[in-house]
Structure formats: structure tokens, C-alpha cells
Image (cartoon, rainbow, N blue to C red; front, side, top):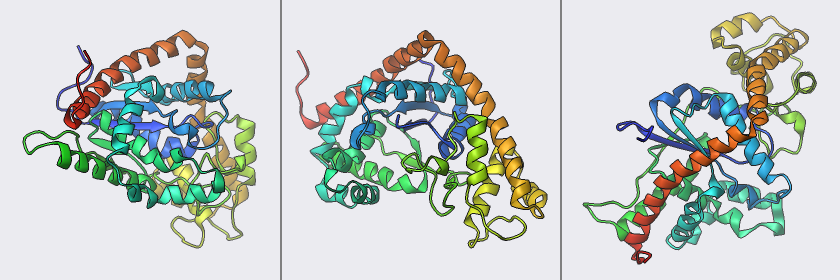
Amino acid sequence: MSKYSLGKQRVLSGVQPTGNLHLGNYLGAIRNWVASQSQYDNFFCVVDLHAITVPHNPATLAADTYSIAALYLACGIDLEYSTIFVQSHISAHSELAWLLNCITPLNWLERMIQFKEKALKQGENVSVGLLDYPVLMAADILLYDADQVPVGEDQKQHIELTRDIAIRINDQFGSKKKTVLKLPEPLIRKEGARVMSLTDGTRKMSKSDPSELSRINLLDSPEEIKKKIKRCKTDAVKGLEFDNPERPECNNLLTLYTLLSGKNKEEVAQECQDMGWGQFKPLLTETTIEALKPIQQKYQEVMEEKGYLESVLREGRQQAEAVANQTLSRVKAALGYSVPL
């Protein structure tokens, strides 16, 4: 019997295995998934096919993939409500992406904002994969008939593209009585949705930032956390406050403290209004270390039980593959492909 309940909406989300997860990933996404996972049927994917759209290290890709899966579990993803799997373990992702490629107009991809930004950084080394990865992302989502996809505001354009592709498939190959693909909705939460860089409060915390000082990783040691917070960008204004557009770093660090301490915004505003940075930074450091300690302990337990992690991913592949293959067969039939003999 399936662990998924009829009537629940389905959620799909994924993280690339490119480096360690950081506080932005956790506070902006994963913690929200954990808090609401019992309300949904959840598919959480390690999107390792997306990881090679930029130069990558083949020697660490597999290890990084297992590490992200272990961090899902360490952060509280519950297998009673959720399936954890690896994207490349299910060939339907690549196959559906090709079918969608042949339906998606090129100019739809050329206007994607993130492609333009990343292409500028890569120069002449831009791959077809970088241009095309939004179609693979659409395949990831559409394969699982996802009702909702948790994303930040910067990813909303990808969900819009996914919907456009699904509408195009349905219009050209479906009928009024039978649609081919379900249209997903973006699931956007505002609180903690944009955790900003420690070196620039106007930029989102990112794994792609070349400076390790810009982010706190979930597996950073207490010494690393202390160093990063001690050296993070601040200002010379006395007293700490939220929502002053001229003090983005102040707002970001107070927001981090709010989210990690479990206190509300009003409590933190009152507690910190007369503090200087010399008093606040040690407080934020201690709070961050304590908040990450149970995640780090659980991660070590999971990584030490390699057989357990492998069994989680093996079962996840079987469960995800059953759903994905049904969708792939539906799309292929709509496009006119023959059934294998």
C-alpha cells in the first residue's frame, strides 16, 4: 500500500549536490518543508543532472549527492511523509526533458533571467545544458504531477515556464476531456525566503559565491561559524534595527537571529535595539552554533550508517520511478509513440 494519502496535494522540490547546504537553503526552504511535510505528499530530489550545467568535479559528484540526501534526513525530512531520491537514478527525467525540448520554443529559454546572468559569468564556456536546464527542471516537476513547488521569488520564472510548456503540450496533444500534464503552482513563503550574504546584505546567500565568508554552511564547525560572523559586513550606526533600507546587513543579521532563536521579530527588535555589534555578534554566533548542532549530529549518524542511506535512496528510486514512468508513458502516448513490444 502506498504511503501517500488520497486528497493530499503533492509537492516536489530539489537541491543540487554542488557543495554544502547553507543557512539560506535551510531557512529559506528546507525548514519550511519539514514544518509542513505532513500536510502533503512530498518528493524531495537531489538534482545531480542539473549539477553539470556548470563546470563540476566528477571526483566529488557522487559523494556530494549522498551528502545532500543525508542532510535532507538530518534536517528532519520524514520518510513517513516524503520520498528522497536522486534525479539521475530515474531515466524518465532525461527522456521527458528531450520530449519537452522538441515542443519548447527556443526564444522562451533565451529570455530566462538566470541564464542571462550565468552566461555572462561563463563567457564562451556556456553549454547547451545551461540554456536548456529550465526544460529539465520542467520535466522534474511535471513527471510527478506536482501541485505545488516551493521556490523563492527568483525561481518563480521557472515555474511559469513549466506551466507554459505543460499548457502547450495539453493544447497540442491533449483534449478537453483529458489533459496530458498537470499545471503546478509556485509555493512561495515570505518569512526567511531570502537569506542574504554575510559579505553583502543586498545579495542572496549563494553556493556559487566564490567567497566562503559569504555563507554559513550547515556543516560548518563552531570555529568556522565564529570566524565568519566575526568578519561579516556590518555598519557604524549605533543600535540595531529591522527594515532600514540603508542598513541591509543589519536587517539580514537580525533576521538570521530571529529565525535561528525562535523568537519573533518584535522580541528581537526590543532585545537588540540598544546593542552594538560587539555585543550582538557573539550572541548570533552562539545561537547559530546551537541551532545547527542537532542537524550536524544527525548528519554524522546517517553518514556512518551507509547501508541505511543506500536503502533510503533505493526505496526512494522505486517509489519515484513508479510515478515518473506513468507520466512519461502518458506523454509518449499523447505524442504518438508506439508501446514497447
